Length: 537
Image (cartoon, rainbow, N blue to C red; front, side):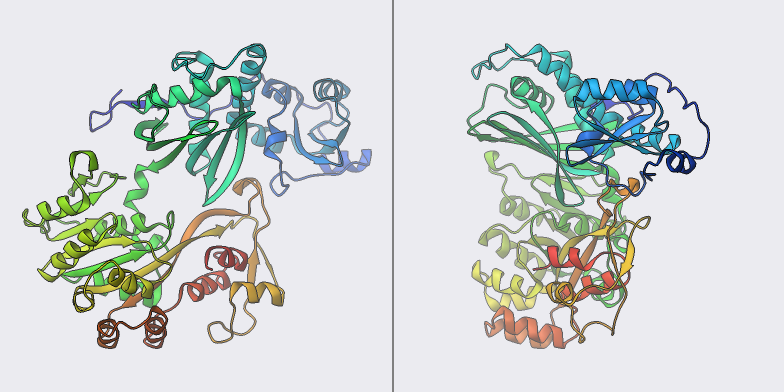
């Protein structure tokens, strides 16, 4: 099947669990009564920190039949959630399979069913790996064989299961990392990496080859990095996977960025801009010309901010261009140019060509060199609005960075209108967050001060529940500082003032620092002060 661009699209089914119908417990009393009568612990899985690796250790059919689920390890004993703790057949089966002592706890049947359904995708992965491992005990890995397992059904199913699990988990990246004993699979969810599974070493060649074939990479080339792309659909949602293969001592590592096509249509108001910061930014991007820089480390949401800005500016009266490497999202009504360094189409070359095509607004994916920076400044000074990104830690440092790249200070002062520095902080789960009074050490680590915050604010901390996969967080929100180029800042720029002096002046003129924006959002219950301390250094 092909998508709207004529590109092949991989269709994946929805992650619906299958299996035999469960046998209901003989006692239909309230589970709390059952726990009390048997002297056992009653557990609510919605708030219990389930260990994912244990939750998938038993066959799904067995869990559904007996309404059981391994959920934790306590001093070597396997904590087993049971709807009917009197089911001796279930206990015997689990002891036989695991060889471990069992500590039963009582859980409502409906809760067990829901959690089994949630982990259905991971269970299928575990079953596939177990089967593959059994078949490959005597297999010898051949590093010269580039076709091993490409068409092997278990490998195909494994790749499909990994992609389904990643998209259902809201992962932004998939990491497939060969090691000496196996292949580690990790997902980045809300900016944090999580171990998901370990693939047997014997499946390494087949797994990597399958991914390279799907992304149209050269499976015979293992010495050089390669980039590719996969389009897929999971149910009604469309995704693009941007793959990068990197040679390592244990084989090729593959990192896949998951691009949800619907996220390109986000509104600026949904990103975390609030109050004066949004007003400052809006005044800058609604000007007919000038340069707006969005700065921050990799993965801080810079591209998302620029795409959301383009959505606001995109109308029939403007001619919009983007130059990207690579083009992450297709935007209707926008002329998007893909950088191709091998063919000589660099950021600078593409930008020079675009300036001859009567543009109104130009988005440059990143300023990487002096030539690109110089052309961006020239474009802004000749009546164009330029949106671009730069890697700096805060807004004032962007000015000194441009000067260090070789742009004259008077040109920077004339062309630059605003600099937006940003980070992404995880959002507390609304279902399980709890209020508390942090210690002085926690407040100090987060940079709390009476100057920026009210007296004794109420803070919240993560707890963990079924809805947030026991992380305590669900989603991310932007933290912003917006520096507008005033006359004083322009004068200090021409005088080559340090970033510290520029920052002090910007704060005096009303700029709210990243940390202060984060602390206010923590006081509002959006995130935690621990998260602010983690993302704002």
